[in-house]
Image (cartoon, rainbow, N blue to C red; front, side, top):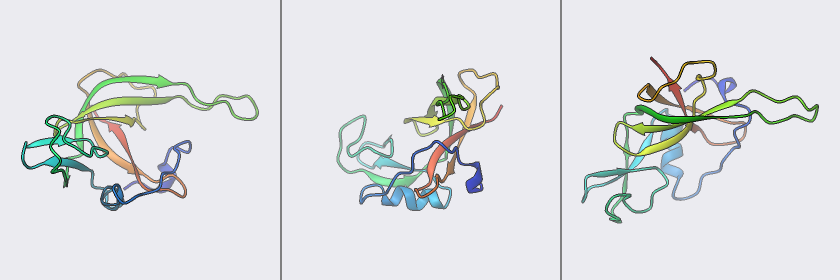
Length: 141
């Protein structure tokens, strides 16, 4: 996991609950967990409570590869500070993970890069001050 100084400063810290605790425990170790349905063989996003394909309720946490491809992206303008100066823009990417689910991730190293659909993305984690580790994407070409 990168040094906490690499954390985008404007990510809002989140707190775990009973459902998310396994996700955040694994994230602290640098592992992405997804929800998997043994009955359907389908993967779902971490927040899922039923299989996103079959609606099966037998989801369990399983480690994911933490890799995928960029599907689409947008650039969100930076926030204006109290001095009226706008902070840096953020690149938000829609990433199709190797296992199939799509995640929306901040692409922390994409500013100024020439992006295109299909670029490989690796899931990494940053820890905003006072919060749990959050997934972000790192593009590599």
